[in-house]
Every structure is written in structure tokens, then in C-alpha cells.
Image (cartoon, rainbow, N blue to C red; front, side, top):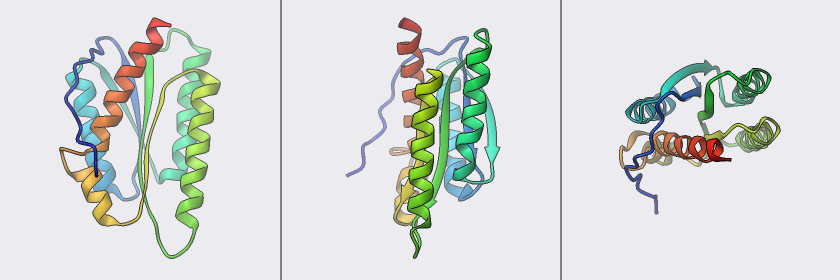
Amino acid sequence: MLKTVQQKNVGAAGRTFALVASKYNSRYVDAMLRAAKTEILRAGGKVQIIRVPGAYEIPVVAAKLARTRHQQPSHPLAGIICLGVILRGATTHAQHIGEAVSDALAHIQIQYEVPVIHEVLLLENEQQARERCLSPQHNRGTEAAQTALEMARVMSQL
């Protein structure tokens, strides 16, 4: 059963969030991107959008953004939201991509101490993608933005 996205009120005034989104499977990723952007803007935050060819390319951009923030403490980046959709096929390629992306994103957020929100979905089929990306009640882009907002608040209190 899919978790329904709940409306939350976490403020983000003065905070900038990077949204790194894959162009591959754009129908689904674009819907998550729109939802994440809307949620950040609704909270009063700013959005920087970077598009990459596919899910595998997301970590290198996330690392560059995190490193820039780390090297320039005045850089206002409060979090990085990574959005992509990987659909399983007849081979294990999707699994390898999903695992590589997950490992890399975890490493980046720990190394640079910046919230990296992982919403690169590894899905079985297009029905799952429709449910998680196109449905307003279950849109993982909204959920990713809410997580980023909450993590920015937590990190600012440490």
C-alpha cells in the first residue's frame, strides 16, 4: 500500500534547494520535479534545477553541488533533491544502476554533511511509476521536498 503524501508546514525562507533530475523517463521525472519545486516554493524557499541525461549521472552533479557548498560555507544550498525513475527490464542493468546511484548519494551526504534526498526510484513497471509520480496523492517529488525541508531545519539546529 502506498503512503499518501500529507501536507506539512515547514518554512524555508532564505533557503535554496537544488533539484537534480534525470531527463530519462521524463514523463514521470518531470511530474516529480514539478511537485518538488511547487512544495519548496510554497514553503518560501528557492529552487535551482539541474537536468542530467539519466539516473546514473545524478551523483556526479550532486557531488559537485555538495563540494561547492562545503568549500564555500556562504553558499546558501540547504539540500539536494535527486529525482529519477529507473524501470526494470529483462536484464539486471536497472538493478546495477539503482545500487550505484544509492551508494553514491549516501556517500555524498555523509562526506559533505549536506542533506541529499534520494528519490531515484527503481520500479518494476510503468504502473508503479504512474502511481508514484503522476498521482498527486502519492507523488514522491512532494515527499522528497518535504524531507529536504525538514532536513534543512534539522541541520540548521545542529
